[in-house]
Image (cartoon, rainbow, N blue to C red):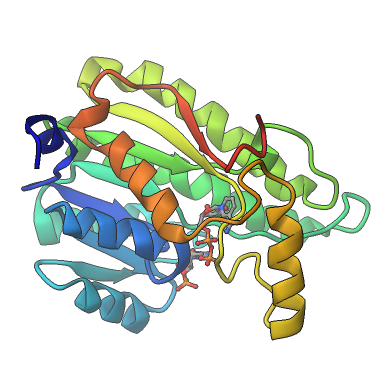
Length: 254
Ligand SMILES: NC(=O)c1ccc[n+]([C@@H]2O[C@H](COP(=O)([O-])OP(=O)(O)OC[C@H]3O[C@@H](n4cnc5c(N)ncnc54)[C@H](OP(=O)(O)O)[C@@H]3O)[C@@H](O)[C@H]2O)c1
């Protein structure tokens, strides 16, 4: 390890990753744990969250959390305070994608998308603020999406929710700079997870090839490639970066 590499370590820090049971969230949780952090992962199913935490080893914890549930954010913040008494890093990763043209999406689906993808990160930030403000390394990373930057036909409600989250990221950076909390967003391109991959193996292979063609790298990403970028933003290596969106998309939006 070179001298500068110490800035990328998260030793002694406590980090919460929502939706850490699988996909990008699980990779972020593993990356944080490997960097020395104590990690809290959440999932809608408490047993799955506990199993995901156990797989990380060390002093990890798994909590049930349904981002769409009213009161859920406050209860999660209280559970974090009780179990660890501190929080240094928050990654708002849990989200849902419901692909629909605007003329087809229902009111219930819009409510669910915005409750999960916008309301939950906002309320978690609000309720976890006292803990984050007590840290000397406080950092929030919100997970965006390409649709939050440019319009994408067929996923309009999801894209609007991600645009809102990116806007919220920059507002929070302004409001929380005096508390020493950095707030950034990380926008991934296409990543091989349950969220986008078709279940059928043949359709999946075709989809992976087609999605890969849309960016400059000519492939989709592995979750670890996103997790490393999130770790950078969360770590002391990004100590002068706040209110920004780092785009890790293989050049999709270049
Ligand atoms: N994959 C991509 O290509 C891609 C591209 C751009 C952006 N992103 C963003 O990256 C992030 C992670 O996506 P992913 O691809 O890893 O998705 P994923 O494989 O579908 O995983 C989503 C995670 O969120 C949790 N989750 C879903 N609904 C929830 C709810 N109502 N309350 C609490 N947790 C909930 C899931 O946990 P449980 O099911 O256990 O509850 C799971 O851990 C999301 O913000 C997504 O928008 C992904």
